[in-house]
Image (cartoon, rainbow, N blue to C red; front, side):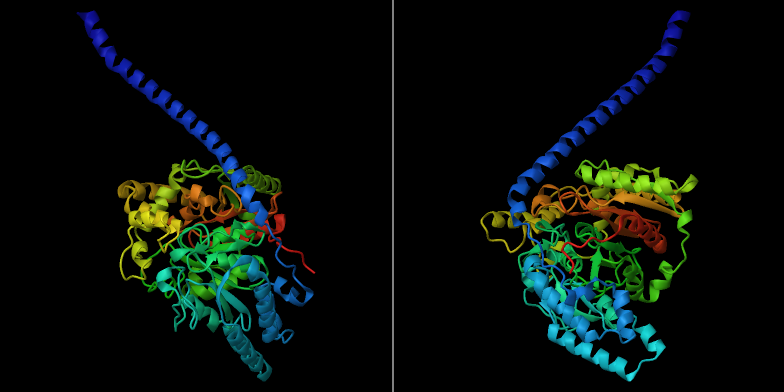
Length: 547
């Protein structure tokens, strides 16, 4: 009996060991399957690019070179404003040059949806008269961008201009008011010149709609500019717009900035007003922010301060940053199985960044790897976060006069009768048919990711993060990669500021880049880290020759 009792006591322990071993084996097997899947996906992505290149490489065209008479457009908006203020440059001359350049490049890009060229020239004349009569230093401080032209994505209301949001139901709709961000820029002295193309309701990775068509990348007209601020990024990169007013709810500023070789800052959520943008009232909480894409990093802080308005001081954008004390962390790739693997060019780009920083930093400042399981579900966390936004995509497509059914529209699309793009229909199906993300799971994982990441970064840490799986994809190829924007969207979910930093061009002549993210309200730290990378790698590279 004693022997029997001993055997009985040992059985539970034996079973526990077996269960533990089984779990370990299953974990190893699952990890191996994932690695095999990612390897298969990596080569599949290469094959997809090859197929699309057979057609779209034939559409590659060089945009017009920058003539000497347009050379002013190489300057930063800050520099141009100073020249106007010091009477070295007339606003009318600058606006005229900007208009001429837009007219030259837009046939290649299809970026502009409406313009106010004549009115902009009249506004510039008034600015020149004001300056000639004399303005006090205080008046100049209140208008830091006096006389500098700007363009805005068409989802921002600009008085007197089209405000279609890229949907057929609003074709021809003009507004008699300015979005708050536009009002603030005007109050700062900037002059609106044109509005630019967006995808329907700003919700796709490419700038294409049924009203104005498709916007092309200035580095390669067969590739996308991204979305939703694609028209803005195209004009800015083509040296046609000194100030490009954007917005971002899932990479809409940073994605086009990356694909078009620009800097793009998405400030901490909750500090810029979206009143009058995408028909918002400006009072509802949101993870979206107003931002800018620019050739010049130095423009982003003063412009962000303007659109942040009364909340600008909370971002501490003028806070001095000791770059020697910045601590660097980096993520090489996400393990989210919905998202494409990082391509070779961008893996090498990240390695170059880490290598240079390692050479120039020591101790705690040296780059260290970081990862959290939350990055395995970036799209799911963004999809859940979107359920907290007050806008209804299905209703907005009808200009809030009804509701669109995704399955019905898919059927109509197949026979050429739908007024919506396939991208809009796929989003409708994702919202209406596919399972919702489990709320409790998503909230818990988001909080765990945010807590761990913020504890890691502290007050002086920055996270280097891939911008996307690949540089600017060929037109339409993102239908096969619908979740790739999540590399940007995850920072909207976390309400963290992040900035897109250009890192030169690939062998194919398209822009490379990396993201830098910091803790909320550490926007100055974000910009300082970006400035260091810009010094190392040179920043913006134009898509055309400069005369």
